[in-house]
Amino acid sequence: SDTGQVHDIMWQNFASGLFYNATDTNSKDSYEQLRQLLDQIDKTRGTLGNRLFFIATPPSMFTGIIQRLHEHGLNKSPT
Image (cartoon, rainbow, N blue to C red; front, side, top):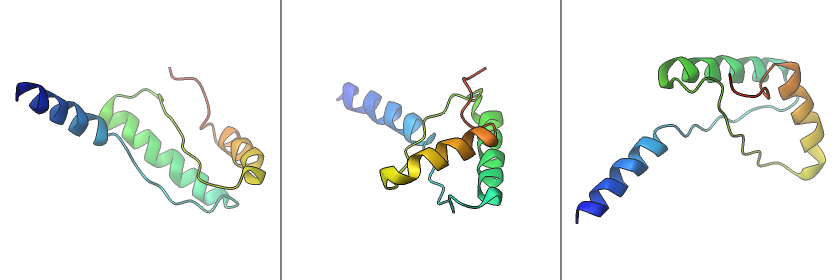
């Protein structure tokens, strides 16, 4: 049906904006590489820093990860 085709197109557009990045959460270099990847995505997709992070780690690691995201300018509001 036409509705199925529209949903497929919408899903393909959405899914093309999903990215996976395995990171050593204790490595400053990993956050710099992540920042560079996100900057490139912003340029190619026009996302202007609009990001959602899914962090699959134990809760005990969240605080350190969020702090390091902040230190590298990765948790700012979109521009």
